[in-house]
Amino acid sequence: MFATSYDVLNLVLSICAIALAFFLCWALYYFIASVQKIHRLVKRVEAGVDKAEEIVDTVKDKIKNSSAYVMILSELARKAIEFIQTKRAGAQKKKKTGKKK
Image 1: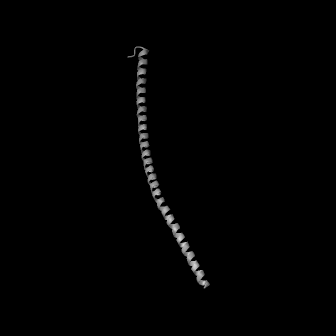
Image 2: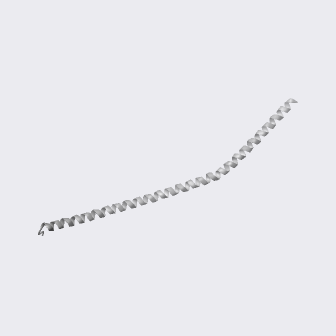
Image 3: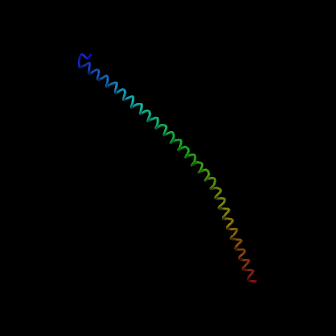
């Protein structure tokens, strides 16, 4: 079957080439599978970031809108406090003037 050592060398080289091709294909398969998993993970993270961004934008808008209401309410409260203070001051003056008579 093998006449010379050169035939044995060719057989060993062909077996090594086949083994190398097999392991390269195997490694390439696992590399591609890993890249696909990473791609899916990145897509999920992007979707999560998009949802978080939408939530932040919604909260910003609600805070912006409610801050206008808060400003109006604070102005209303300030006016109410001023009104109450003037009424109390007027009532105290009436009591003092009523007692002096």
